[in-house]
Image (cartoon, rainbow, N blue to C red; front, side):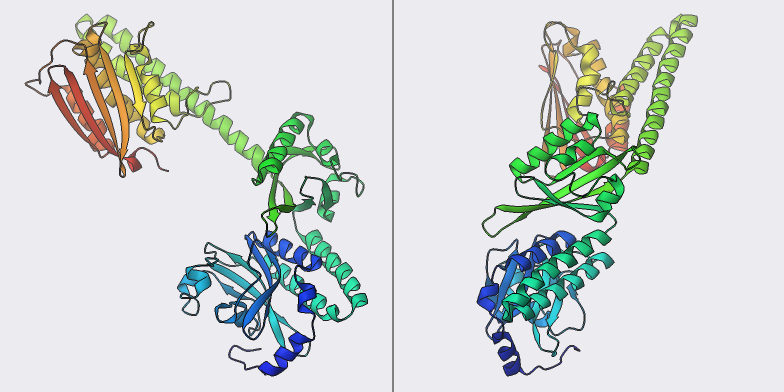
Length: 497
């Protein structure tokens, strides 16, 4: 029916009265439909709504506590008059619904998709709809097809509600359609009871595994995993069952020909109105080729990074060799070699690693990088440089200027400042101030320091690293108790994330 089409409201109300609405509230067959509709569209709410004179009644509801709302706030009252599925990507941007109480308060509807429920005699009853509280672009072709198939099952259930015998037939037919829909999906689909007992697999599962139907029900599924993955998969699955958190894991699944292929397993819980899990719906997706390609790229990246690390060692060696040939340049060579070594340590910290070579600290951690850089300056008995405060994410782009900056400060402290004496200490403290990171460098226990009368290369290097490369500022205070430096950096300059 075209939008704007006017229905005979009295005939529509009479048609609704022909159905036993109360007996269909929380109907098991309808509940399976809304559970699957929500899982199919990856949304938290699925409803079968009947639009009455002054209210809309939810015969089945997944992910929603209320059983009815006033008709004037009903989205389904609009959807039931459409010729096709009514899709609203963002209700706040739709003038028809922007001021709707279910958008502003209540449910907080953003995305809505409703299939008209229209009887064979042309009278609209309501809608089968799915709802999300965040905007979405729309529905995939498979989701549209699935909702249309499920809406036919809803109508059949409504029509057959006038006869108990016909009702029993409708339940069987609804389950058959559910299985038909699941069997046409390209992924392996499965479901479990709340305790994790597997009671359903679609045809794709049996095609992939080649096992007899029913042989992987219950706990039999775990035997299909690679022996090295079984314990880990059990642990992740048990955690999801205990907490209700979504299930996601990569494991090797045995195919019908005996080959173990990498598979992505996912599952989401379906809740009732009391917040209890009533089912788990899950999928298995073959990711074998993609997984191998990622591993190959990782090996190449590790090899390339390892060669870069060797280049730093070669450059350091060449500087030392040149210094021995020109003794007059020994001091300059030592400074240059130290800076190259600092860059090498920074690169080694953020580079791709294998499981055995990976640093103990998080490779995206500012404090982890500083601890790595300061290691050569620490005492065996007590830490001389302490790092505290808010940790911040870094990446390979910011690691190099950070290494140069703090290596220069630590070197100067060793030559002229707090680290010149054994009892001297340096405290490095980082803190967030809005969208900027402030790093304080405080030296104590060293000789009395005074502001230099001229700017040396070290000061220029600090300026280059903090200001030009990281878009920050550096303020130095030459206190008699020790040098204090305040470095302020935009957080966006430290990490692409």
